[in-house]
Image 1: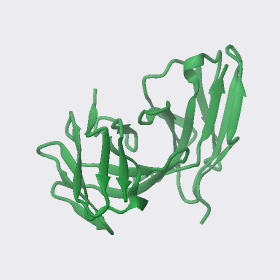
Image 2: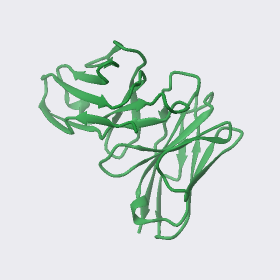
Image 3: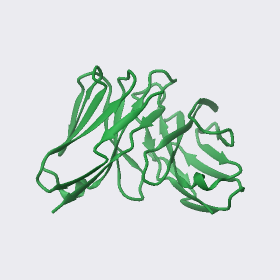
Image 4: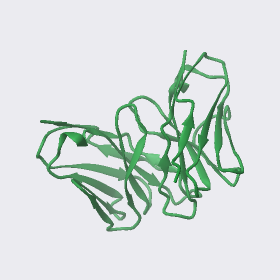
Length: 113
Length: 113
């Protein structure tokens, strides 16, 4: 059974600081997704990572995938308050027919002025 | 391009009742997946429909059932509601042969009393 773990579960940081969120998963997969969720809202797609070594950047966020280590990271550069949200990674197991995601428990990010 | 829509937005039901939630997929997408998100947790995969047939199922009992229609819209039915069924129900559409990126609807908040 595929398991996905994120850490930290909660992150409080100052504006302008850098930090990394980690996502580990238990079985082989080369399809990993990052989502953002604001309180009471749905999931917004941030990044789609489809191969070992994939790196994608959008604004202050950069995501990478190491399929051999079964690890993805979401790096935050010079955080701003607008980045406050819960971030989820999700993995698509190759054992299923496709597009069935197993999510991590989420990282709640709070950026303080 | 029309995004994923869900109805209703909120719903309150009593334990033992039955509920139907509805989802219209994004145009051009042929696959609909349903997820349950309990408060403070990551979404959990319920099942997926492709070409009007169930294409995969998570660890949910048979009282969770669904349908997909020829226009790719979908329903989630839950019988014999339990208090633990209280959650945000998210519908996601995707193209099965694509990169697996799923586009989520706004969700239906179900409260069981």
